[in-house]
Length: 107
Image 1 (tube, rainbow, N blue to C red):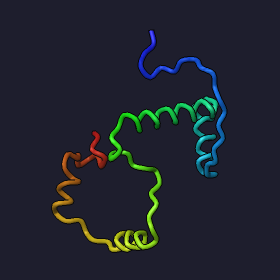
Image 2: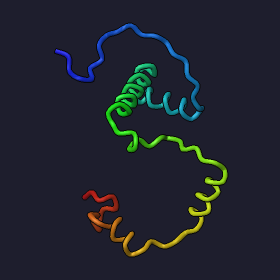
Image 3: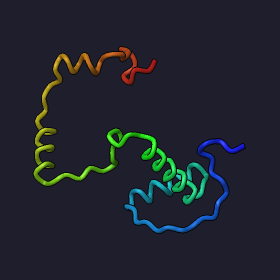
Image 4: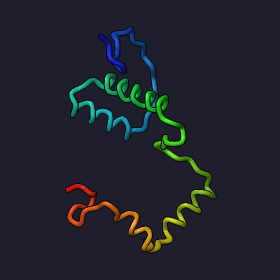
């Protein structure tokens, strides 16, 4: 019996991609820590990502990198630098459901 999402033994093909040095470092580290081949790790991650893109509505997918114009970037930076204290409504919203002893809401 084959379950949904199971990978059948199939022929493989090779692809070539360029990644940042940081991505390569993280891939090497993850593969080593998990004791798997890099190609298996990449295929698993790519399959997972492609399945999510297929299953989830486009408006809930957050890209890992956002590209903005210089003008937009400057406005974003100005808003980040303009530190304002949280309002009572924000404190109530973000404090809701959290334990006093556990900052992440877990006990």
